[in-house]
Image (cartoon, rainbow, N blue to C red; front, side):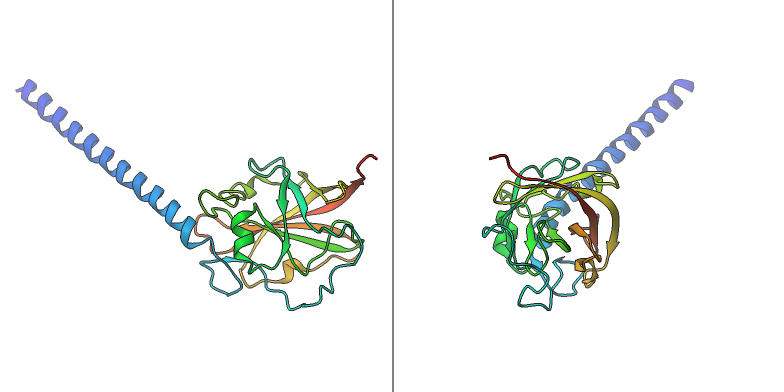
Length: 219
C-alpha cells in the first residue's frame, strides 16, 4: 500500500514539475517575443503625446535661440558614459527629434535647438533608444541608462577634441509631453540624457549632469 502511495505521489510530483517547466518555457518565449516586437514598434521617433512611442521633446524654437555661434563649425559630439556598457566615444549628431534616420544609425541624437558644451549657459539635450533597431547603431544603446546615478561622470568631446566632464546630479521620470526638461538652469551648463522607461516605455527617464571641467586637446 505504501509503495502504491509513493508511486502515486512521485507521478503527481513529476506532473507538477512538467507543468511548471512548460509554463516557464511559454513565459520565456513570450518575453523574448515581446522584447523584439517592442524593439520594432517603440523605436520610431515622434513628437506626439502617444506614450507608446519613443518621444523626443518638440521645441517651438526654429532659430536655435538657445544656442550660440561659438564653438567648432562641426557640431557633432562624442559621448562616453562609463556607467553604460554601449556608450563609449559614440558620435552624436545635432539634429531634430523627428530625424528617424539619425536615431536609427546613431547611438543617440543631440536635440536641435538645445545648447552646446561650450556655451556658458546651456542644456545639452541628448536622446537615445532603450531598444532601438536591430543591426543598427541604435540597438540597445541606452538600455542601461537606469544604471547612471548621482555622482557618476559623463564625458563629451567636440569636433576640436575639447573634452567636457559632467557630474550627474539628478535622475527622474517625466511624461512624454513634458518639454520643461529641455530648459536651461540659470548660469549653468548642464547635460540631459533621455530614454524611455521600462518595462512599458510609457514615460521618459531623465538623467541630468552639470559641467565641472573642460580640457582642450593638446596641440
